[in-house]
Amino acid sequence: MITAAAPPAWNIFKQIFAEHWDGFTRVHPRYHTSYYAGLVDKMLGCGDPNQMGYIDYRCLRCGEGTHRVAMSCKSSLCLRCAKVYVDNWVSQVSHMLHEGIIYRHIVLTMPALLRTTFYQHTRALLSPFMRCGVRCLDDCFSRVSGHPLKGGYIMVIQTHGRNGQYNPHLHVLATSGGWDPAAQQWCHLDYLPYPLLRKKWQWHLLTMLRQTVKSKESQRLVDTCYTRYREGFVTNVQKGDVPARYQSLARYLAKYVVSPPIALRRIDRYDGHRVTYHYRSHKSERVEQETVEVYTFIGRMVQHVFPKGFQRIRYYGVQATKTFTRLKGVIQAALAKVNGLIKGAIKIVAPLTYRQRYQQSTGRDPIRCPHCQAEMGVWKIWHPQYGVIYDELKAIKGGKYASQEPRAAPTGSAGRTLRLAAGGVPLSLPGLR
Ligand SMILES: [Zn+2]
Ligand SMILES: [Zn+2]
Image 1 (cartoon, rainbow, N blue to C red):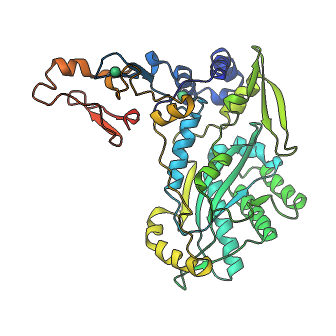
Image 2: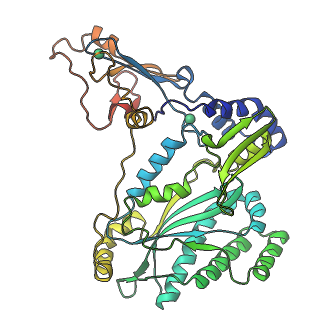
Image 3: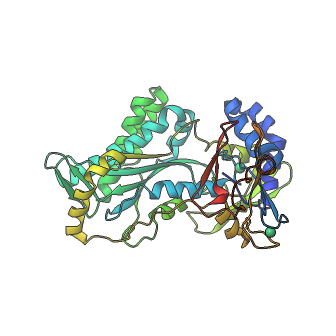
């Protein structure tokens, strides 16, 4: 994966980590691990062709035009790669949405007094947290309909609020109703009663917490939560016809879910010790500015990095791939009776290629030769670990085209993979798409 040109704030962000990461890990040994060190290293090298590797393009018609693209780091800490991450995320989720199915966007939160405990036991709690969201919604659906139902859920965990502080919550795209295994039919539910959802969520979350963190302190917290929040916990069902006319439900959801804790464009100032950034506050609906010590800033970025290999997006119930293929027809037929089939409700979004992203941000096609307008071809690929893994000049000298027609510009075939006989290193070339 490859990124386009970096915005100016990128240098500030890198400088902050370059100057203070070591000091930060001394104060916060939790982050003094090779995993985090690797993420920071990769992020600091992001966009530098000599550290990350690169692809050179060259005009194969006139020989004049060249373009070098540095590989990106894909580190979850990297704000430069955040846009690519969002695009890929949208593409992944949108492939899991099904036409003719009605989804609701539900947010499940936890009160502030539970957040510290959650942070201290992140590893143990993250997955059970997602699963208890599923149990809660199945429970609500079953209660409302009067018999056991299994809904379908696309569950995404997010750990930060708008100002980058720790605030773990779940975003759920839930089917409007569920599968009744006993009756072998789809049961559509038009709405979820709020009070029920709030209380059920409170019960499921606290029960999970009590079972997972067995300390005295956590048990005491659970009790406090029951007495202090008699109406249950905050849940939020986006009102209105969310999916029906949504061009892209996934892009809509991405807006809420996959933004980085503090986006690059929000960083205003850094004086070596303190960082100033702004954000739009939920409470005041105004733009608020905040100045924090540099360690606090770094902390706000890294506390949202998930453990290695952790899956942030998960599919549950009828939304799990295998089940869905089996039930999709039945569900669509049932919903068509209720609402009329919603045609084109879900748009499948293909991930943007490097070329499209570059074009979007600069208005210029990076692969078109500025001299003769031909489409440039891959000339050389260099990887820091494997060295030169593709060399067009060598190939030409070696007689690559000796018995062929003169080479035309690369065609627009969908993503090619170069697999070189010698090294056998497969490398996807999104730039060529
Ligand atoms: Zn990066
Ligand atoms: Zn040219």
